[in-house]
Image (tube, rainbow, N blue to C red; front, side, top):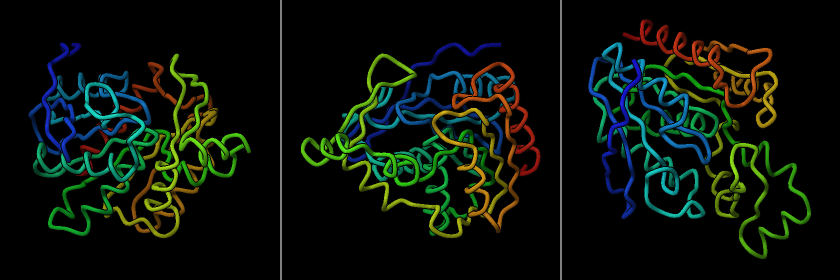
Length: 259
């Protein structure tokens, strides 16, 4: 049964109003982390909300600053800023073990969250991770090597460049601050220790994040139990009915494993 759209709650993070929706329920809970320019009312996030509602599972999702219903300017966003907001939501709105479900850039945020939480008293609260079309280090690994001369010039002169988006009418905007900050948040430069099982879902026809990037991520998770599922005809969104069914099955299996 589809869950009716609930009004968001808001928390303040460094003077920016961050919108979130949460469903109280059983542990392990789910924490949704969306992609670049995605919002918490997207197809995958909403399908998880419906499943959590039907199964009595706790679930929290939020919009990064400059996204969806949150405040702030999109162009002010960086991985560090969105990471801090995600950690604030995690600490304010969850208790007990949690499964981080990260899509595209959200998978990068999830991996960084695991690293940051691993340094503190909540090191064992990340019980599992499900990463969909993960794009860790995408600014460094996938963007910078392909920057054209005009884009480099725009970054230097204007501080940003734009390019058409296949996912909406508005162009994608990439700032110099985002790219420079991305270098400070790299995870594919050493061993990533999540201290939990990780499931990765990756389309082999993804035009944005090649499946070899997911394979590279696996190589950086040598200490964890990692499952990589390659969807032969899958794209970047992985939002077809069969993709959403696979996502739910993967989350169900993870929840059983870590319960």
